Length: 425
Ligand SMILES: [Zn+2]
Image (cartoon, rainbow, N blue to C red; front, top):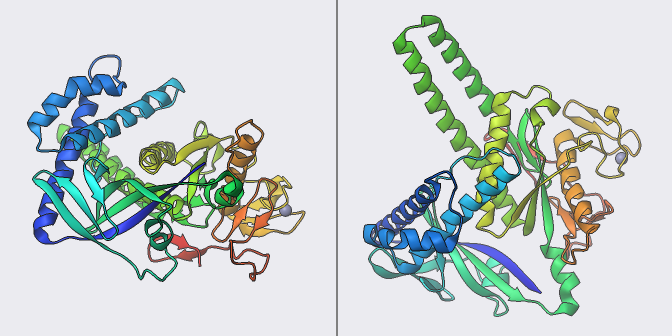
């Protein structure tokens, strides 16, 4: 069987190279958006990669200085995004036209050469060589496990620019012998459960929280601004309402991109191959205090996670939300009184934790059970917690090599007030 890992590596980039990388990424995004625009023309959206290639390749080559394979990768990125929108439409869900603005570019082995300590990347002006900034090779890091490991082959990478720094997310893969499948899968095919709610917009089964305070604050401000402008009633005020609306929408989208990136990071760091959400349909009716704004935000967040997950070969799925907030993730006992606001305390086994965190674990478990009853031999084996894993029977496995640790998971997350994110220890 095949095992895949993504390893982020920081790049040591001087200012000349940075200029080239920026220009390359800009043209890559232009190309991807251009292909989306093309696919979007007409009543039926074009999703065929071959057709999009035929109809856009020459123009993109003319309009950019991109390497031929970067042009193809931009087209693939665009086609994948359009395909996932169309797939969601077929399920009767809402999804808008894709637009790429995050500074990234997708490389494969035809436009990049991956060496042990540096990479050669095609840019808008020929190839450049960039050194990796690697951690100490003796330490146990993803770099030492997958990058300096001859069993793993680098198959491609995504170039990222974040907070003024350049990163390469290297995709690696290894062929694993079948007698070690169990060992390989234990660390590999795992699920990240995500609960969506009002006070905490998102909570993962690994114990990371994204607070809804910022969202609520802006939403109130927006509604106040809007109400006072509406009282004016003039044409000028009317135009202002639209301007405020656009500004707020942009702000919300930025925040949701940040959360989506965090969820993806969480999944990548924990080697999850699936991210499970509850079904979004009807979520506004299920959650106390949820508004149209929350429904919009959850739809967007899901959409962003879906796009971003594709680049890491991670599947994003929705599961039946029934009782995920009332069920005990430890013993399975389901009762409405198990939950009181944000506190979960099982009436049967006494398990106590944050209610949304308990729900995130249940969402992961539900995906796991749904897929283990099928005939799929590659069914995932566990739900990722911040330490260790839950199997389909709800039994807790401590992390590998950690057998000295107690059987009770240190799974109570701690809230980090500074940025509204809770981080596990
Ligand atoms: Zn219980």
